[in-house]
Length: 335
Ligand SMILES: *[C@@H]1O[C@H](CO)[C@@H](O)[C@H](O)[C@H]1NC(C)=O
Ligand SMILES: *[C@@H]1O[C@H](CO)[C@@H](O)[C@H](O)[C@H]1NC(C)=O
Ligand SMILES: *[C@@H]1O[C@H](CO)[C@@H](O)[C@H](O)[C@H]1NC(C)=O
Ligand SMILES: *[C@@H]1O[C@H](CO)[C@@H](O)[C@H](O)[C@H]1NC(C)=O
Ligand SMILES: CC(=O)N[C@H]1CO[C@H](CO)[C@@H](O)[C@@H]1O
Image (cartoon, rainbow, N blue to C red; front, side, top):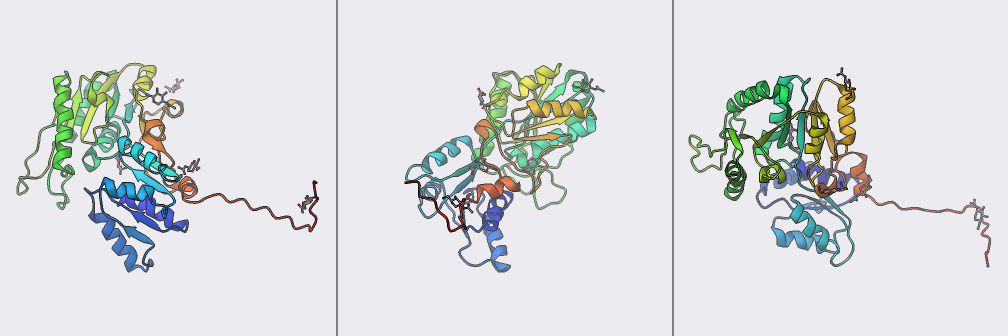
């Protein structure tokens, strides 16, 4: 619903008609949104929901009837989309791709707030969020109380039926994705990571076949590990201790992605100094993933280009047209 509205709203506000293709794994919410739009009087043909997989996606990219493509998804699919959108005739593309973000918890930060930030940055929507921060960098001198509080609060979260209001963790989107996330966790422990909490399939009463996974906390992470390098897109939080500011900055920027970064500290001048040096399109200070329709969202480097929300989104759904008028009735002949 969020991905759909971030694209559909600015596009129609700028006078475009929209063809929206949801992920084949999330087909229904976009249809519900379209029904709501129809109900409030949006004319037929203005917002069109088309279901399909890669074949449908490439037809959209190549169609001469469609003049711009905006995509949210993986880097690999983003590369194919950019190629497809240039294969027949030139078409502008906005790419909102993956991330491997860090959340830095400094020694002077409030531990409870830092733990909340780290949980928000990892466990929302079963971790299936591009901007969430799977690398949680914690200053060595608060590592022990931080980890203890994090494990306690993570273990208290109820895993289960998403229609139950007490539930905090639902199911992973597909069996295939569950296996992928589990593969990252198992691979990490084989490579020497320490499983601090969770990481096993969870069996939920009444939903024995659900793709539930306990939110996972790992420590003893090294830069060679896959969980350090790649986007997992699951509830897997890696605790990485650091000692100096330079070390935290280096670890946070040690990625080809550049989507987001978080900073928890009571020292605002330090926070701003870090915000300037972090290579990421979205920086959160003492919060994580705040979203505002007025503030542009998007990535650096392999996290894509173009922006959603704010004036930047309007600029990405309009074109600049320059009109010269000479009202003087005089036109000097240069020849
Ligand atoms: C993009 O990421 C690569 C790999 O980490 C890095 O070498 C390069 O400097 C980055 N480019 C920019 C523009 O940040
Ligand atoms: C805040 O951070 C700045 C820049 O890193 C540093 O110079 C200053 O000493 C810090 N202030 C406090 C109160 O720790
Ligand atoms: C989006 O708009 C920004 C200006 O806000 C512009 O710099 C950028 O080139 C645009 N990108 C796309 C993909 O339209
Ligand atoms: C119209 O164009 C002529 C040059 O061809 C220029 O001399 C004149 O100042 C222009 N008038 C205005 C109002 O821009
Ligand atoms: C703490 C936090 O930022 N969690 C976020 C993870 O990403 C989703 C989707 O962007 C946000 O809604 C959550 O707030």
